[in-house]
Image 1 (tube, one colour):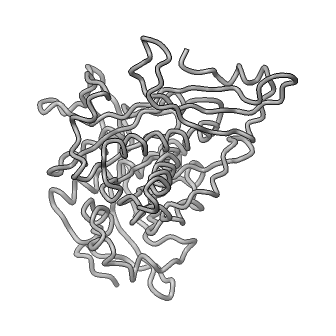
Image 2: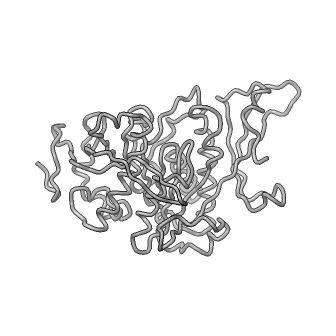
Image 3: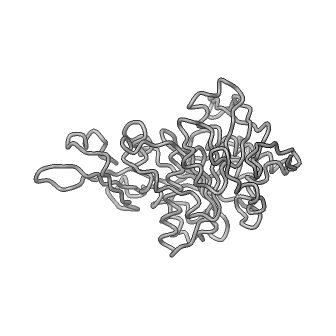
Length: 364
């Protein structure tokens, strides 16, 4: 077994609040597991005459994203052990991290990864921590995020990737992982920040239930530039989104899109679609969250006069989005997922008045 599950802890009356985390990377547990990188977690329990902790172990992997040039499908017949020979540490590396009850194979994240890969010289790795991401109930997977983030940081530093070349993208609880990655790199490099951190609908959290205190999260603290895109008023957290340099709020136009599960996915498909749009057509309306602006420190600071105006609950920009169903055919199966297409975009002027941004980028 890779992990001691929560039910084992329950027998010893584990309190989820005093959880401690640590990582184990590359530890050889058995012949069958020796190649699998692991993240580990210690949870305290009150047991007379026993050790003060019980060790939990979960698998974590990171792979370079590759796609079949004919079908466009993600290739998955290679191991993460090929990571070292597949990355150029001198070039930017985009790190895509999934959230609760999902994986690197989740369709919306595959689409985001594919959108980035279509740009020249873009390197993308995806992190898979799916076993830990479905651990416990409700939001209890959040307690794993520091260990996973530290493990990612260790892998990137071992590969000699410069902090300024690391572009982190985390969806839901994956944004917690991205924060932990950036923090560990900052700590291990004596204060060097990662290039960027993009939080896609950063997850809401209930510390009493999850055992994780989210108030330690500050997306702009360990990144040269941070962007949060939020759309779900329940699954997402505007409190965390406000800690980013730029906070974008999506406003789904269809009443049916008020479903929590649908809204929670929209920032991922919105960003994927925007990357595709900017690559093919371009336009100044949403340059501030283009791939180039996220990556280039000189370029992404040009609109600070607008993005620093904090009104309407801390929101910098509001984007009306149209929600539709996208269909993909993969492995002889049809899949559908909600897709967010931008319709209109607004900013807040110095007086806090909401105004529209025209397609050519001009403001009212």
